[in-house]
Length: 183
Image (cartoon, rainbow, N blue to C red; front, side, top):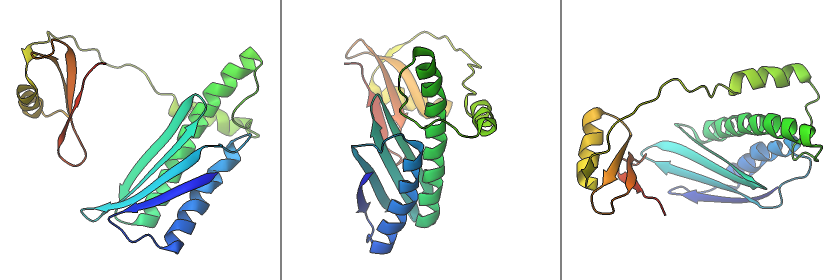
């Protein structure tokens, strides 16, 4: 894997670069062939929180993980664990589909079937537990932000009175707000 490691608001030392490349490079063992695209690793510090963000573009999917903690090395370890879980989840789904279709797999076959079953049980809890229905009241973005804050959620779906389309406002990690609009 080719790495692009960059730092934001932090002095990026060779030891930190080597540690990140070594830990994240271990993910290569999960692939039949190493990803040909560059793996982007961003190390940053914001309000004394050490953040590591990793993006691995793959054919047909994008693996991305972000972790914040008080220690940069711990953040690197945690983001690697998070990516391993994502890879195992995608591997299980992809290998099942490809086995059925007889297509060559992107991920290596699991050599321990008992662990594969355990990961499948742990990570495929995507059960829908609640459905909400409500009328979309036309409002502007500022009113939607106020409504979102009043209900205490991190996002709010509304009918934009200016564009006449369904939009979503959300609270970003930096405390500011974002708007999602359809194309």
